[in-house]
Image (cartoon, rainbow, N blue to C red; front, side):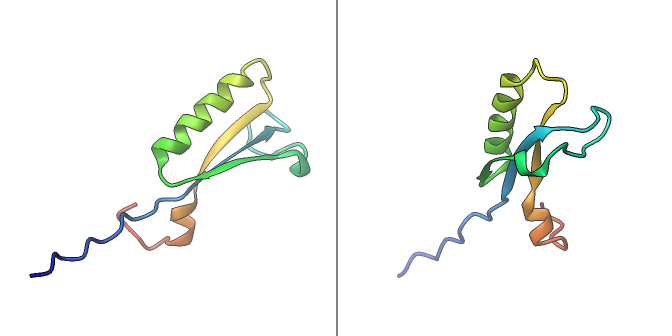
Length: 82
């Protein structure tokens, strides 16, 4: 008897980006050409760990911000599980 096929774990892709903001109250970057694409991660926990590290490295610059973008929500907006 064959073992049932295991479904691969669903990828919940997250992107970490960062850069200097025009205003610390908003989320508009000063210069899009200088936005850092930190990386793409398979889940929120991995992305959050990198986000925390990058944010701590730039704590002295009030205008520098890093964000976790939930790409899986953009790729599949109808999926209620994510």
